[in-house]
Image (cartoon, rainbow, N blue to C red; front, side, top):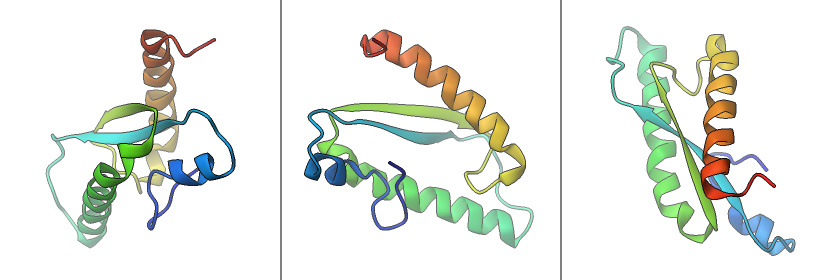
Length: 103
């Protein structure tokens, strides 16, 4: 289930409909990208900061949490969707092995 602006990490809805355990996956920007060359980059950075701050308060009810670390790619950067997908896929697969949740 994907989150949104109002509920960035939507674990509560999954529990409401009967899920016993919830695995939440969030993106964590590794500081390294300098802000900002234009208005779009300012908005992108602002949106990322807002989502990250909201997620801090929303993750308390999830049973398992994986934070996908990425650098120099904004969450609104549609040119890099394939890159974000690959980063997320590889890190999630690795972290599921560590958590022994991939069975």
